[in-house]
Image (cartoon, rainbow over all chains, first blue to last red; front, side):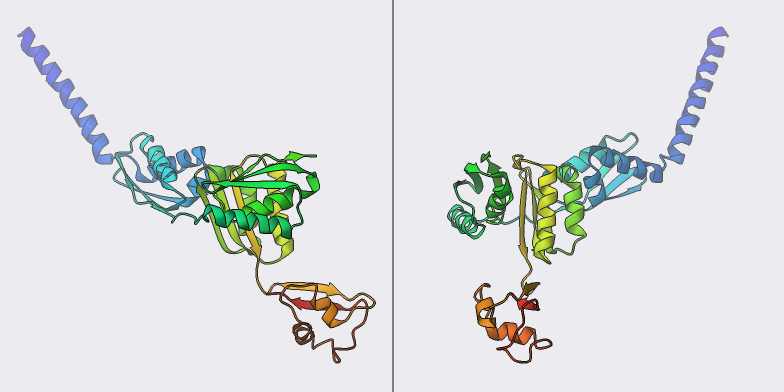
Length: 166
Length: 123
């Protein structure tokens, strides 16, 4: 008798638990609230990223759309969304911009040299390797921007300024 | 993201009528490419970049701006100037082009006055 009673009790307890669980499932996580959480998670990591990503949630499934700069931004957004509690899964429909075109090294070098002459910058040497311009030499501060313009406007991948600024 | 670091520069570029504006992070470098409507706008953007990175040593920006073709440039006539003399100061500009662009204020191409502001049609 004793055993039977406790069994009944356990069964009742399980039933209550199941009902509570089912109730929670039927209600489901609030999609609008999830969208807000994903957006604020994105904004916490990078306001710029958040502004480029649209978030939609349906039945706990988050869909990301929009265009971002590169693959790492695309996966960063996905990871951020996955990290939000109650998100079931993330559909990453973000597209990535086509890459910026960088000139060939000899073209960059001749462009930097022509630009240095155009901006009347003297005493600066430009080395170009793998799309990267490295500026060396000595320059008065007043000519720093001109030297940088000369390098930046040659469509390089990157500009490294090792100039000594007088 | 570098877009966050250079947020003010991006906002300025987006708000100042830069044509063909492309902003993109690539290989940890923020590329900002486009055609500024005037030399002054280009300079304003460079000054903002310079403000954010005073010695310009971060190596994380490529600010590649030209000034839009056909943008207006003005020249103030000095004593002793002639249209052909002024034309030699600008690449690809002839005295005829300056004359055409200033028909409203020049009746006779041989007669210009010091202090006159001439439109220079640079292309």
